[in-house]
Length: 190
Image 1: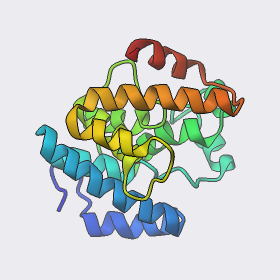
Image 2 (image 1 turned 90 degrees about the vertical axis):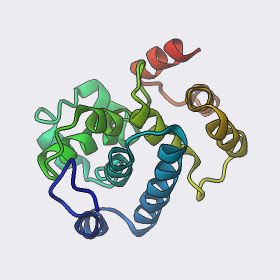
Image 3 (image 1 turned 90 degrees about the horizontal axis):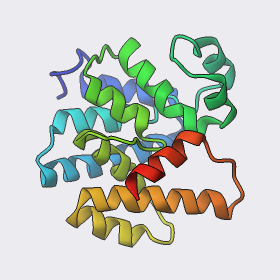
Image 4 (image 1 turned 60 degrees about the vertical axis):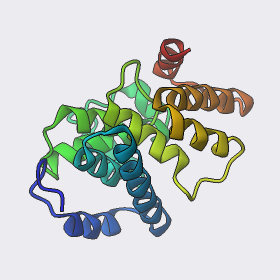
C-alpha cells in the first residue's frame, strides 16, 4: 500500500498503468519497482517514495506526441526538450501526470521522476535510486549492465556516475543529438 504521498492504492495505480503503457513497458515498470525497493532497503531511503517514483516514472513514455504538445506549457516542456524526443521529455511529462493525476506533491518524488531520463546535476537519494533502478532492472541486457549492478550494490553515487558516462558514450557512438542539459549533468558528475 502506498498512502503517504497519494490517495491512490498500488492496485489502482497498476490498473491505470496497464491502460496507459504497452505490456512490455508495464513489465519493465514492475521490475524497476522491485529494484528500487531493493536499493531503498540497502541505502535506507524512503521506500514508499522510491516505490511510487518507480511505478510512475514511465507513465508518459508511450504518450502520443500530439497529447504532449497540448500539455507542453502546463507540463513546462520547452520546445528544445520536445525536439529531442520522448527519451528526454517523458520524465518531465510523467512528473506532470504524477502531480496532476495522482495528486503527488512531494518534490523529491516529482523531481526523481522528472530527472530519471538524463539525471540531474544534483539528485536526491530517491532520484539516484530511481535513475539506477531504471538502468539495472533485471530485464536490462546491455554491455556494462553487470558492472552497473556491482557499482549499485556498493556505492549509489559511483553507479550514477557510471550511468551518466555510459549514456553519453552511447549517444556519441550512435551519433545521436545530445540534449544540452545531459552535458551539464555529465560535467557535474565527472
